[in-house]
Length: 584
Image (cartoon, rainbow, N blue to C red):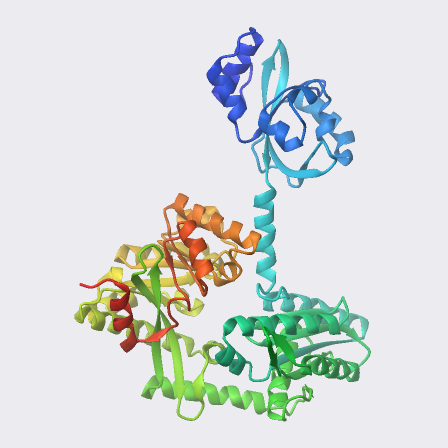
């Protein structure tokens, strides 16, 4: 057998085919053909299967190669593809062109039992027994397709409840508002906030709180129509978009129905928990003309509902100013905290999975106000972003993290301190110079500081991200990609960015090892990180089972409540010392 054309065909396979033509099968080449993990099919110009390897036989569900050799290629094709495929085979042999994998979407292999297997195919051409033949390399892409679908789903949905997320809600609200204006009907947006959900979390723990959120999601879905959109916006805030109602009065009736549904006690792990909610209602075109204005109006109505004694829906009115006043008050108190105190950093340890030693900490911002009490980040960070305070707030966090790293170093404790950068902070052209000056002013070694950005930040402007992260890496500062797996980063981007560490998002860790999809995703992320020579931190580890799974998968570092929550700086030294952590 001699090859007139060799397109994407391993040399060993061609050598084997050559030997086959002369009646001799070389053991090494036969072993290569038989051991190939991808399916291999040799097809002549009549679209007849000439040879198949064991991987293809297994993939197609046949007992042996003899059941396929001599059969028309159609036996491996879905019925819908057979008619067009014969013409395609003729064109291929008339004008053979190499085709690598990834060129055609949604290919499928028909199995012996009639089921279909998603595959990808690469093609080449050779000569077998004196006639031209096509060589098809067939790859099972079931897991990779499932991973892509999972990531796409996560990009538009809340991982805990499966509801639409904020981005998906806004997209649907844009369509609903446009349709309402065009056709003259009413679209309505209902924002819901659970009453004292923080108390449930604080008293019974986050697993119970998460289950309550899931029950709330189920009840909301059951209470509305299939065409309505139910979303979780974060924390204990939900939304229901009604693309079509007769009038605002109907939207208020739906709000009453939701309050009744959420007013029933929730039974979780033997507990009977009373929950309730506040609902704000805004309508298009009566209260707002577009999606963003509709969201703002519903937000203002929600604040009014909270101030009106709860358990009663409130509809937006032009005079509604209470929510706006509240945000203005928050912004002013936050300015005072920046000037006069009230902000603090707590630090969650990052722990070596193998030894249990603390190898670093993540700095997390806390705010306690003399008038407002403890204000959670979920409440004040959006206000900081909207008011322009996010940049001075980010500056304060960087300064304090460097100061604390120096203080620990003076105590003989060497810890890497990780700091999250906000999108606005990461976009600042003076960021690298600021970090350089802070390290110099506090006398902190560059490798004692790690800066975290999210996948979304990296993807927003890949060129800017690459320049900034490269400059930070040149300083000796470590860079981590936070919430890994929840965005849209590509392998090419991961390879190009000078990222030392990938942080697996807690949404993937929550259900391991019981959720098969999450276990595959975590294993895949760890394998990818090892291939790219990146370190990994798994976030949100709360159970010994989760830690045992990560240990089996050779995940190097984790953080989460299983070891410790975020601790005040004074408590970190003692906890690190007890873990056998790093010291100078």
